[in-house]
Length: 282
Image (tube, rainbow, N blue to C red; front, side, top):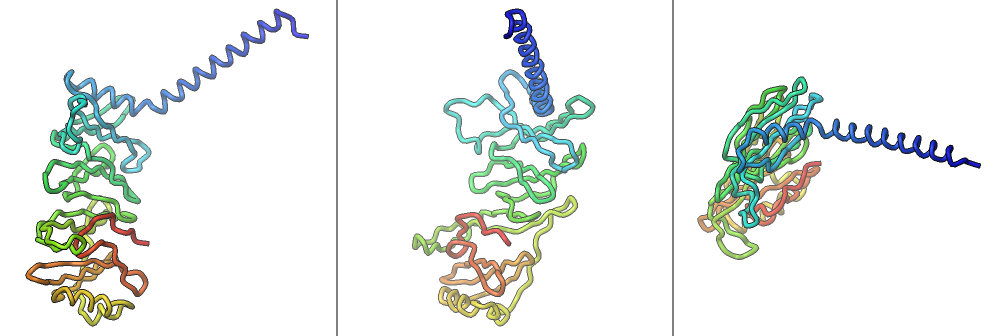
């Protein structure tokens, strides 16, 4: 039977173990959150009283074993604030080196819609700026202690592997069959890929109607779009997409197909109207 003295001694021992466990747990948590929080504190310390760290994008961008951060700072969010897509922020770049934070201010015109562009071999940062009719973005790459802009486009989005799309807002007076009138505005994807610190556009080559008909359903598709107007040109792109440009009623139109085996799959809704994410390649 446990005596009163033994019980008190045992309880004290258990309490000591719990305290040590909590201490180590707290140290582990502090160590895990350390660099990110240190960066936040360092940036906050450089701001005026009216500005705050609004967003922090922390990741190992160049996959060298050390994480870096892109930080958005600006006025404290107000209850009636407009959407962050219309609120300009200051963009910072920061990382930890030898136990201290190294930071630098990059620009003052970045929107809250900015963020990651995660590709297979690298993570880039999308710095979006304001425009009423599109979403212009600069892509930044991190290499060691350096950060550099490698691309300028609109509304970039990961496609597959190291490729991505840049959706361009075009006022081309296009006709939307779904609503039955000319909308005058389409969003067209352009296709790029990242390789060794540079961005390249997928090359395209012009193909003939005869070559297009060699796809399993090529003849059917060609007949369909010739009903809408005259087919002006057909292009095959390196990433397996085929673009058909045609003209009807004085309006230039286009439709994009994805090649799957020897058949054409249509990854868009109606002619030239891109309403949803492009179907990924397999």
